[in-house]
Image (cartoon, rainbow, N blue to C red; front, side):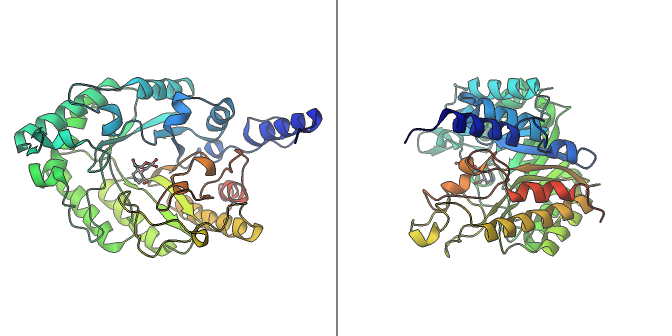
Length: 377
Ligand code: 9MR
């Protein structure tokens, strides 16, 4: 099928109106501007958008967001794949993009059990590193990565996902080799690498009471040990039926009390059916594909769009109510086509988790979120 040139031109124009800065009679509002008095609005940027930039996506980011987190390119396996080799190319481009567009940049992440090459935990292939060796590896990595971007990356997820859902410390190689105090070293090295950067502890399922209590204990302990923790990150990978607003609210309050500030660091709402064997956001889990698990291949029906919009609005009303302790709300991806939910926990699904659809047009959820910025409580 060929497209009539006028139809094509109109489609291009309407896409520009939808996602670009004010063009035409009804400019699309800007999340960053609408929430400017409350908190920053961030977006996770995929590596593809950095290595293969798309003008329409760049324009959308510029118009809608004032903060950005690299979705993958600063993870250990990407930035420091071998002991003596760093790959700073994509990260340098991400930082340059942030500077050009005046975005507050968040580094994700320095110390995590996942996406970390095996060599980090070994002194020779198959031989576990000693505590001293692993501390040296951790320090060098943090100094080289956070140090390189000192003054440019404004805050770091220093440690990611150190807790089990019951609030105890995860049995990661970091903990097994160094001991429970590995987090203290991570925060200390990060502060030394860039004394001006904000330092965060970041985790998923933080609405769970036991995990929230564990995070409070963890941050209290870090502070007693003399570490600075500027905010606790609640990743916020949500579904349509869970969690309850009351659970999220209780965590915002408790975590803000412990750290002073909370950041919503990886927000998305998955409308797809949830495989029965999966819980939380642990990237190590997976489930088999089936048509039943991929019901919206051809688009999200209007009733579901409205439900998603209302659920997003509900969370933003909560964030607005607690805006005094919320530093930032970051969406985990720019648009539905780029959401990690297309590939996890089931491969090859059609996700609808974000505020912009696959053509970068704003969805009803976008309008609903934007409206909350000016609602009277
Ligand atoms: O969205 C990320 C996906 O592209 C990666 O394949 C995956 C593994 O690195 O990580 C995803 O991001 C995760 C984030 O780094 C930590 N919290 C959970 C996120 C979703 O899995």
